[in-house]
Length: 524
Image (cartoon, rainbow, N blue to C red; front, side, top):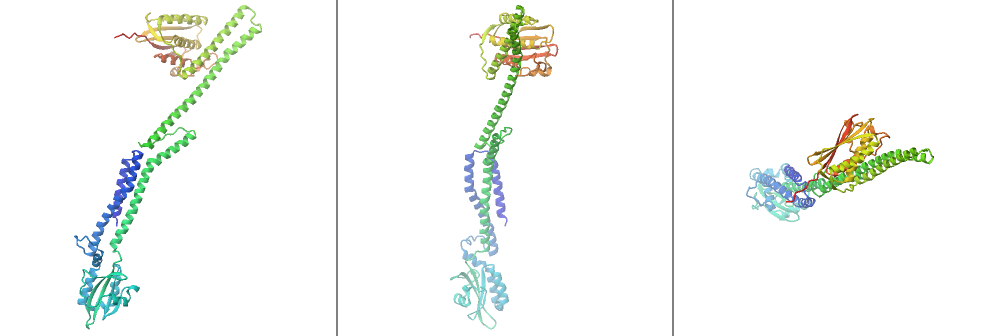
């Protein structure tokens, strides 16, 4: 019988659909539903299976035992059902008793019919003249000839029919149907059809078996579905978290935790993934910072070595009396002074770099008149460039009353760093630097142009990166820490401005930066 297979196939499809629907629910809800499924789902499926099997077995019983459709008491009235169980056999024996009674004394026929009746938990007994001539009980000690002669009714009882019989409550509970007959000589006999009431009819046996199998499969199915559901919702993400923690323990941060559920476990996995990303970012930042610090230390050490060597050499010359004339001594002292200034500048850059790295550059913003401020700067810069035999041209196209908001010291650092960079890469016999101040709407634009070696086009996007040096600067004559322009960019951006550059190789470079003008806000 395949009924239970269809029932369970339907339940599997229902559970699978339910699992897809509630997969992304909270863990608490998942556990509550799991409890309800485990308790109520097997009961519902068992009731459905019982109803289906009941209907099938009722149909089978009606066909086998010739029951009427309106007769619904045969499950509760087993005597009635067992009484009808052998109706067809009883009718056959009645016909033989009326038409061919000798057949009822034919041992071969009786043995054959007795074998058939065994499937119905029944057997035949035939008596003649008060003596048992056939006993189909197969030697059961409860049904010896003597016991049967005392137990069975005598000849002549005509109360039996195909609808009823005697119920004997003795050592064995049986239903007895009696058929009286006379042979040709007039000898009287009786055929008894005995059915055990302790047996269960095959259809009921099949119903019990089917229900037992159904209940077992329902429980297994429910447990399997709930296990898979809980496993997908809890165990899988936990397994991924386990692998993730092992990777982090081993120092591997190049992985991802992919969990789509919206429950507490899914939220935990997403938080863990964010933690991994932050940890990876922090680790990469630390590695980058360490690398930059090593580069800075290497650059500063390299750039300090040259002026220190020079200072040491000239100092030894003074001590040894090499500078014998006042002019020579003055040149030695001036050289030592200049080299000390270079070292001081490098140390200042290192100090400022540490402040940039922690966003702690000290600013003192004030209103500054552009014309007055840059006139002072040009006067100071001009003296230094004149000493280096570098020409300087200054053009101010802004209004004399134009005011900006800036930190004078930090803005001066910007200008000095740019010009120092220009001087450092000057490769012409007659160098020059042009400084132009322009009014560009809400901003003041400062342009610093030189005729140095220029910057290759491919390297222009990187000149403001920390520690970046063009190929032309990789020599001891130019030196530099590699952070000068990055400091300039940081200061300009902190002023709300922007800096950029254009350049042509062997022609020169123009640095541009803009600072927002100060504007009075009218009082309403």
